[in-house]
Length: 366
Image (cartoon, rainbow, N blue to C red; front, top):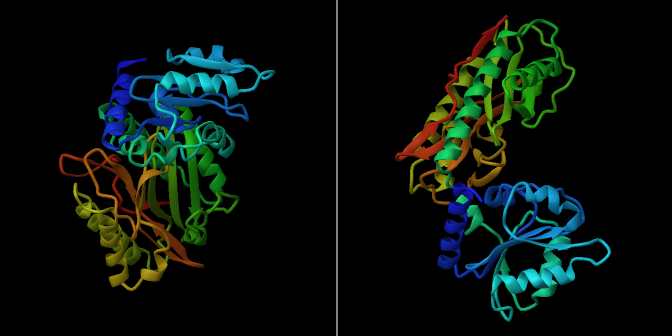
C-alpha cells in the first residue's frame, strides 16, 4: 500500500467507529479504486474488498490474482472456478475478526446484486446500509492530491474547448468538433471522458447525442465536455455562436450567468446543497424562465464524473470543505437553442473555488 491509501483506510476506520460500523464490503467499483487503487477485471466471478477495524483483504478469483497482485499488497482469499467462492468467502469473513451474529455492515451500492446476496446469505444476522456515511463521506471531501489532479484536468479541458471554438467553420458537423476535442486530449496525455457538441436547436436537449448536424450562421454552439487525466475527470460547459447570435441569445446568456454567480455565492461551508440549487433557480424563475430550467443545478465530481454531493432542490446535504461539484444552470428553448453554463467548484478556504480558468463569456466564432 502507499501512504495515500494507508491514510484512506485509517480515515475509513475512524468513520466506522463514529458510525458504529463493523465491516465495509466493496465490490469492483470506483470505491475500490479509491480505497485500494485496484480496478479488477469485472465479470460474474465475485470480487470483494472487506475492511474491519483489524483487517483488510480481498475475495479474489484465482484467475485474476496474479494481475491484481501488481496493484495491491492486501491479502487475497482466492477461489478457483472448479470450487466456487463459498469456502474462500468464509475464510475471509473469519479473518476480519467481526462477530458474525449481528454485525453492522456497509455494502457498496454499486456492486452486483449477486455479489451482495452472496455476502448476506453468509451473514444472515447482519444489518446493512450503503456507503454514504463511510466511504462516500470520505470521497466527497477531496484531499490535496485529488485537488491537484482535478485542477490539471480542468486546465487541459479549457485548452481543448478553446481550440474547438477557434476551429469552427461552416458545414462542420458536431461529430467533427467532438473528434477535434478528443484528438486534443489524446495529444496531451488524456482521454475523452464524454463530449456533447450541440449546434442550434440541438442545444435545447440537455442530453443531446452529438451527431451529424452541420454548423451554419446564426447557430448557438454548446460544448459540454470532459477529459480524464491522471485518473481524474474534468467537466465544463461553454457557449458560443457562429456568425451572428440567434435572437434573444444575449439576454438568456446574461440570465444564466447570473444564476451561476448566485449559486457560487451560496456555495459555502454549512450551506445545504438545496440552498445552492435554489439560488440558481430563483434567478432563472424571476426572469420568467423557471419552466425552462429542466434539471438539477449540479452533481459531485471525483473519480466518477457523477458522484455525491448532488445539488438538487431536495438535498439536505451540508456542504463542507473539500467537496467538489458542478454548478450548471440552463435555459432550454425548444426549436431555438439551449444555453447552459457549467463550472466545477471545490469548497476551499470557506468559499467556492472554480477549477476552470476559461471565462463564461460567449465565444463569437466565424
